[in-house]
Image (cartoon, rainbow, N blue to C red; front, side):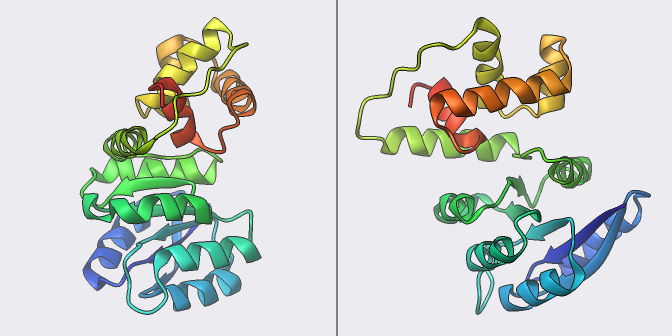
Length: 208
């Protein structure tokens, strides 16, 4: 059972997310918070596996809450639920430790899959968000791209699919290899490129 904490200042969104989660046999909502301050307190008391975090909230925002929650409970997984209007907040949220970004208007199956992927240690990104982040980062880079040597042909295949926003399972299906093998390649890619997350890996694939 995956224990989920919902954090959003809009009651309607929290109610909708709760209905989605409650309909799934492997998900249970252990709490709701309408601001970052309450999220920090509930995360400490309820020990959720996955925290679905809004970014823009009154008082303590989602970025601050994410950083403080993960400082106390590094094993927790924070998935940002965002809109395109939150672009300026996405990189700070990544720095704070968020493991994924999903869109509020995403299909329900994508939201549920994202929660499960986060709980399993994956980094769920809506493809639109990942592509938007990569384009913004590439356009902002002033220095020339770093050359990376020593990548195998298979690692380059995986890197290209990471840039497209595919999940580990989707990459495995596309390349006809196991999910564990994909994770091994991604770990190797992060080490070789010095990339701390999937967005940075995507930047290398895009030449940024």
